[in-house]
Length: 486
Ligand SMILES: Cc1cc2nc3c(=O)[nH]c(=O)nc-3n(C[C@H](O)[C@H](O)[C@H](O)COP(=O)(O)OP(=O)(O)OC[C@H]3O[C@@H](n4cnc5c(N)ncnc54)[C@H](O)[C@@H]3O)c2cc1C
Ligand code: SF4
Image (cartoon, rainbow, N blue to C red):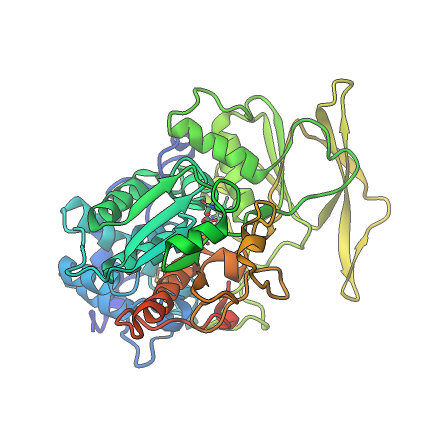
């Protein structure tokens, strides 16, 4: 156990962020570099090593949190790293980006601020990278079996790393020009610098994983041809179809899906453009959708020099405390102030867009909205609350409806979909087509990085069993275990 009195002697202290006026002028991560490590042992000492660690259950990866808290408290960084990597291939991604359902389930959180689990996680792995302790783990023997992974987001990367380490020859096919999925082109640099992805890719290459970019399965290569060339396939193609807003004026210039806008900003950081083809500079920006994707648009618009940024959400503003329907240890819907929100802009709740208005050149200028309220479970517009706000760039960040079916991959494989339009799978993450597996948002629907990694690991075990009849890879989470979904 870490310090038995740690939680009595030390309060919760989290990573410090850089001043807003400084950070909006650059794209680097918002945190003060190096500020976490000096406080992290004390923070880890607050862990009570509970008899039943509910944080394990809160974490979809089942991370061994009290174990690595103990090692972090004792500053035994190499033991902490070994326990961290035992369940998580990419803690530098989750340690930066996870909403930390583990902390919502922390026992200390019942009557005190929870242990800063996510900060401990990122400190252990950042220290390990800085010290050169993250080495490639190439397999000792090759199985002679081949696996294709479609998609290089966190699910595909986790599956590929597990299968490569199990001795299979793995190739990752990615339709984009770079590896990383939403980690690369959705999530902005200020939330996670892309160097973290690049060095993991280097580690994976050194272990033997092969990467093929610019190839879209279904379009550039038939899914059936791919299946013939490999002994097994993992589909980790994400849930990439954006939800649209079919209201009058939607066709005007300047209205874009978030995933048309954010990748261009990320491509500027990669050096592909000097200025982004879609920019918020000097414009009144409206972001429709109150979630993470919307917050990423807000932070991006601030950095591009928007004249104003307004974020709209159709649902009411969540409370700052748990409501009785979301008791500990569940992950509650709470009012969140992300780093992007600290940087400015306005948030409007309980509003719905009725239409857009443009100028004579067909460029959007105004967004018309109305206040809404739930009456008997039905969303009603409040009469007399219609108004318009300036909108010269609008981003639609209202979620994703499922796997891309236009490129032909789903039909060429002949995959069954579930009732929600995701790729159906069994307890081994195998689809309706033998030897074809699915992991991450493609099977689960729009979710989180931590779930994508967990499912990638689980699908890898299913593939390993399919290829060899048994597997030493970690046991899968249950794909139906949606009770933990956040
Ligand atoms: C803007 C944004 C911000 C987010 N922020 C967070 C966050 O802060 N924290 C968090 O936990 N989650 C966040 N999420 C959710 C998270 O990114 C996803 O749940 C996660 O990336 C899903 O991983 P995946 O591997 O299943 O799919 P993806 O990351 O979507 O990767 C799928 C990959 O498959 C490729 N692909 C698709 N079809 C084909 C094909 N036919 N052939 C070849 N390649 C193909 C795609 O190009 C893509 O690279 C965010 C999502 C968005 C959109
Ligand atoms: S991956 Fe997420 S839920 Fe799991 S320990 Fe890390 S921050 Fe917590």
